[in-house]
Amino acid sequence: MEKLGFVVETPLIQRLQRRHFLLFDVLPLLLVLATPLYWSYLYRSYFEVLLFALMWLATGLGITVGYHRLFTHKSFQAAWPVQVILAILGSMAAQGGVTSWVAIHRLHHEKSDSEGDLHSPNQNGTGLVNRLKGLLHSHFLWMSRHPYPNVVRYAPDLLRNGHVAAINRNYYRIVLAGIVFPAFAGYLYHGDARGVLSGLYWGGVLRIFVLEHIIWSINSFLHVFGARDYETKESSRNVGALGLITLGESWHNNHHRFANSPSFGLKWYNLDPGFWLIKLFEIAGVAWDLRLPDAKQVDGRRLMR
Ligand SMILES: [Zn+2]
Ligand SMILES: [Zn+2]
Image (cartoon, rainbow, N blue to C red; front, top):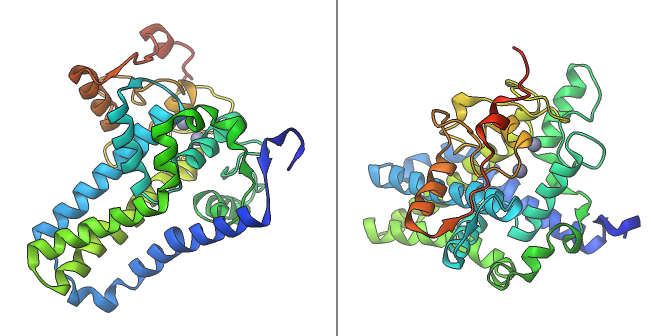
């Protein structure tokens, strides 16, 4: 264990990281690249498009609203059934168990774009080749092997949360359930093996692939390209046009400036579906204590552009 116990690196952890990387990062990429080989075998009806869209939206909201805004930043409080649903949906995204994800992301905010940030695109030096290497590292390669943040230091609140800890222990089973469910839905709709495989592809493999690349793009491209609306210590950027497709995550510079805010868009006219869901939760009485910054803070200390 490294001094102070901030991160741990053991052969067992490295084996688990490699297994996770190959199963959930490399395999979906290879299967999607191989799509032309089995494209003609797949059903491609409105049902498959709907299955893909619903699974993408549900697991994407699990990541941005659950893993990120609720569990990492505690930007609002939620009733335990909401916590459970969000943690399960976030787990289905196959981006790691909730405790690991939260610990890694808290470390990102602590070290942002400096030594110790596990996925900074800005630590590989200057020049085109080094910049490209930095992007590739921050987008994808860092996950194959990295120092693991000590969860006792970075996520003690989640270790004490019984519901979340139970979901964390069953992470692999939940990922599997998120793949079996659309496959089963495909069988119910079409009643044959093609339906099963089509459901597995659209609602499982392709959905995991698309969502993970969207989330990884926040780590990589949104620390390089986009608008710096606020002066912050790291290089985070905003790309408002991607607000819908990223469910609000593309307001990444706003987020680094107001990390504890449940709203990433900050203004009502900025597209931020993750925050819309939190507002719905609040109206329904299952979320409260939304830690929104006041308007003066939002309008103050902006960069002149
Ligand atoms: Zn960031
Ligand atoms: Zn964050």
